[in-house]
Length: 241
Ligand SMILES: Nc1ncnc2c1ncn2[C@@H]1O[C@H](COP(=O)(O)OP(=O)(O)OP(=O)(O)O)[C@@H](O)[C@H]1O
Image (cartoon, rainbow, N blue to C red; front, side, top):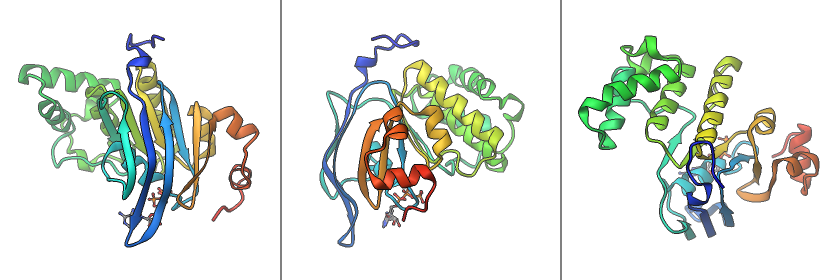
């Protein structure tokens, strides 16, 4: 299958977790998990606070090593990027943050600024290029983080609660960007506790509760016929502890 970017969806390696768990000082924070994420889908990782969503995202992206089991990509490791709830930005201008990412990525010097400016334009930040990245508003910082990810042309993009501190307009900007990545053929793995957001974006939902994956289902199935009492309660808006 071909996506709009021309990238073959079949080319994106599948992410496989085999009995992967995460313990801290003997306490199980993520129970052994078997999972295969395949294709150019948008997977929403959902669950209440403390369910283990961030841990799962960090394991998947390779920022954490599982205490037991294995996390690997089939065939080869794809180009990846991760966007965090609080963007990690350098003490430099918006433009310099992007140029630096391109430099690290091996882009020739003469191409860095034009490409960085193109990305700033795309994410509505062109007028802010000289502004120190760390004084940008939360929404602007998140768009800058997305612009940086865009420049790296990731095959897989992880987003960990990227909109939890944003107002509706900024949330829309992030969601539009996620859709653009998807259109370009990037596989999305995104955590959120916002059910409305998941309904807008998800192809499939991974639902976690207390460090366990309770369900992994196509979005429509998850929202219309959740299989677990915890997911039913979560969707109803009950307090799920
Ligand atoms: N590096 C760590 N060391 C020790 N405990 C941790 C670590 N990271 C996470 N935890 C604990 O693991 C549990 C799951 O945390 P995690 O951040 O993955 O939850 P979450 O589902 O992302 O929650 P939220 O929606 O509040 O962001 C929490 O109880 C947290 O305190």
